[in-house]
Length: 89
Image (cartoon, rainbow, N blue to C red; front, top):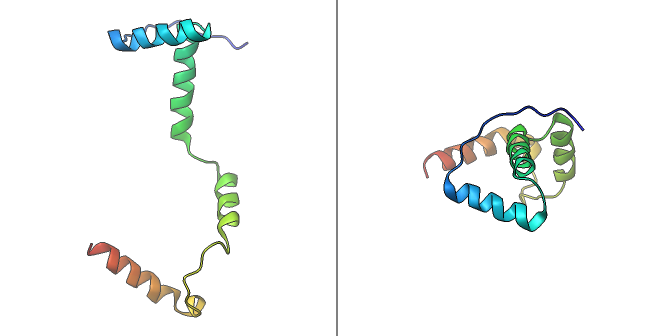
């Protein structure tokens, strides 16, 4: 197990009561629940790594159709039209 450092956290009554309830139900310490919450928050801020973004893009290829047959030739015009339409909404 990695080393943990002591810190002080101030919680309001509702937060502390909710943590006590979860602790009682799960048998986990309040400290471990708080560490898990901090990890979840920090991980949610990271976003996907570069490789994951590439993989998502690969999976999306060919999944959608505009119904237009000249996208490769007129992509700039379609993009400009889409931005113009979106801007004036």
